[in-house]
Length: 422
Image: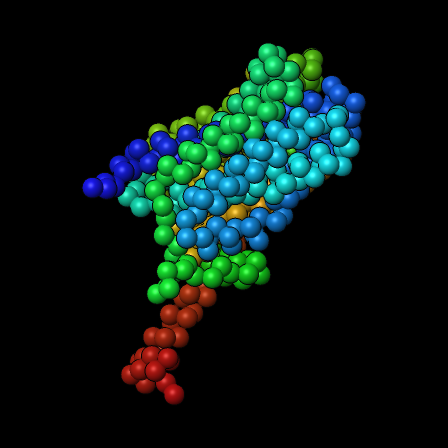
């Protein structure tokens, strides 16, 4: 006799899956870069391989349709995790032993699986049954924590394993972790495709253009995507700025690296906090409040007078970023159409990744202006995001009020709603 798994057990299995595969993803770029630098490829090849892990995220909206259409999304995820792990491990084993172009192809293949590791996997959590609204918000907090775990533990695991097995062995271990995650994801309950027809097949996935049209037409999704894009531009460069500012305030390269790490630990701490105490209120309103909080935290980083204050400010900025990301997960969970949930998750995640990468590049290229100036500009960009979201929300409310007034007027004048008038 089959039994339905308890939601808590399902969540634990999900978190194990997400932690394994996101640790592999989070450490991959560092591992490949270290391996290339220590070998004959040098920093140039290492940077290229690291970029190839994130560049394919632009294909995420096209890949997500496969997940939304699949009879069993777990199998799609499992295959993508195995491909990611196998391609990553193969690239590490072959680097320096075969032409670099072949290694680049393998890394690109691994990168193509990235969107399913991030937004694709998160969309499955939103589709699981048995979680009440508050439990869903808590689960999204823990899901956000797995991103922090991956980005923190992944590079640390590369360093620890590299000390014992060497950089090549460390990257192979990351590949093994991804393959283990494939087995773990198969232990999750199957999720029926939304819109399943009489033939047993799920609804056809949206085209990429249609997906972005859905995001643009659903107010909360549109506003959160705008906020994500602008705040990701700031978040992408903040660790670079923290490294430079920490070096200036602390008097050494170690102080700069430590300040950047503080931001990461602040993110992880914020994620764990909302895993324990779920974010309250309506998700979109919570997101708007957290954009304002993020602006304040970045401003504190810009004006920090000393190293100790900077540590507190960057930890707060990391925590605010985690809370905001968790709130955006909740908005996607509540407002994404079930038949296109993976496409909405992955498309918005791909945009966030692309803009974040651009933020890192912009921060590096404009570092001559100084970290405080750039952090001040980041505060302005975050405030711009807040103003744009509030303006869009106000316009949407006015349109709704005018529409309601028009319906009431038509009802009073004719006794029928406009839709009833021929």
